[in-house]
Length: 174
Image (cartoon, rainbow, N blue to C red; front, side):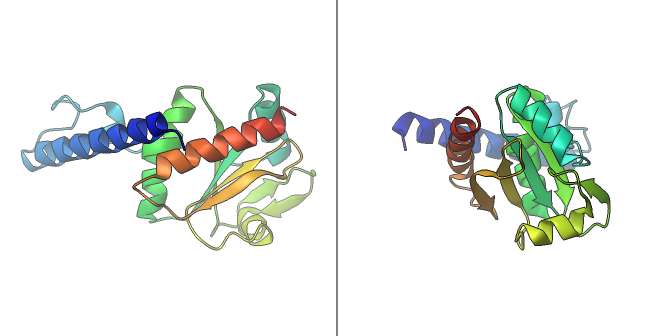
């Protein structure tokens, strides 16, 4: 892994720690985060669009030359919140990735990449997702374009995510 990439992610992690510390101090003082000069992302977690139709989502992502990134999460998962807020949300807001979120405990309807109807829970089970958060990188046909990121390793998560995104982008652009 290039040293510049590691340094960039180490700086980002250190910056996030300072932002979080500032938000905690602001909260302790009874100030909203925005009034304390904290960015909006520190004030509230980003929400990712829900996965509803993987065929349509995958086609749209492929049109952009991108893999479809799927965050498989569950309610109350603090690691899921961290991945959403600190990594996937900002990249999605910047238009860098095509991302959707799926609740592995929900029976919400989901159209799979092959057009069949299923539920979020059944889809996660069929894709052997047993840990939240799991981030999947899919091609237009719903196949893995890179290995999944299971769980969260805070020290180098950004680097692991970028590595998987690079691998998935190369696979979908072939």
